[in-house]
Image 1 (cartoon, rainbow, N blue to C red):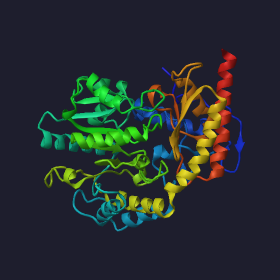
Image 2 (tube, helix red, strand yellow):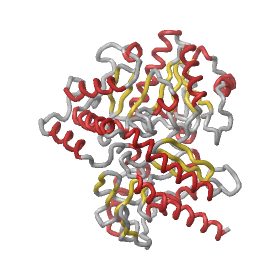
Image 3 (cartoon, rainbow, N blue to C red):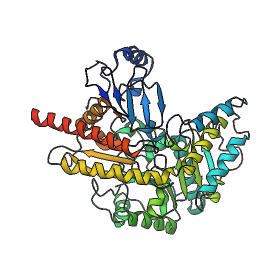
Image 4 (tube, rainbow, N blue to C red):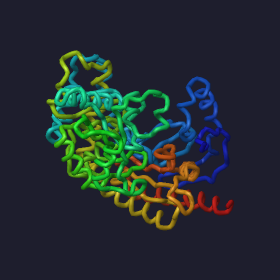
Length: 461
């Protein structure tokens, strides 16, 4: 098993002092150890594993601890802070709503909820003209799965209930979300999985070489799935673990297939929405519109909020009071989302993501050209993934990915623990407000981290 970031022994690291980065202590910071020890005592082991940094404040594209260290953030708090950390507009919206005071209203109406639903509908394309608000992405995925099966049974009988998703995908940690997910080790606890959930290969062109749409239909046949039994196809707009996109012809053929089979196409936009990929919605990269789209993370830029947007005939399948959620449409979260969305739109952060992302991907591809231990560079806009591989192979090298991320942290660039198949992807996802010169500086640090990690392995071989 690869060692994750749970070693709390401080180590001396070179000091860093640049325009955007400062490392002035050993890492982890010796004074931070009691905080980690208390968390280890009171929280489950499952909450451990990220880099040993105690966030004190975060602004724009930078994160600070309480001891003088300053990082360029390449995590966005796991793709949440699209509009930037600590934006005054979002903070002010939260404070205004809290000071009314109105902190919750269950499923009773509140003004921010009404405004947010209307705002989302106004910027989403047809036929995504109703929205259902939730607290978390997993909860929204559960709703989308429920809508698929309900619609399938209504239109094709009880045999039309199969949910097709993709290998290596991640849709959340609840029961239905993990059954839709495509990472087998995360589903072992289920014991008796629902046979109505099946996964097919994701056509990334790297781990899965076959990218023709015929591979989708062939995979269904190999799994004994008849097309008329499919109620819905659930797909991350890009795979969160690797940042890989499917080919556009594949996605357009999938859209046509779902229409012809009366199956709902669901795009999981939890990591892709609100400008992340260089377009407002990730599915725009393919020139398609799904029947349902699931949002979270970047929707509010801060507080817990998620949504399912979709066709009215699908979202209206259930009668009043049959799908309520205690925190759905929380007024404070909705106020934050309204402010965040206006920043994304008014500052043209989708366009900025495309422009700044072009610089990022140019640098990452140049890095990969020099390092054969980078199997591929995936992503679009301001999301990217570097697949770390063992020498002379395409097999994932988890230890290298963890080492690169740790070394980058010590140089003032902060990412989250490697994710994806084999945990061997270095994931890059800065706030969309990051400047070009900060991207360049970050890439310089990543280059140093990668070079040092590879040289150390070469010397030890």
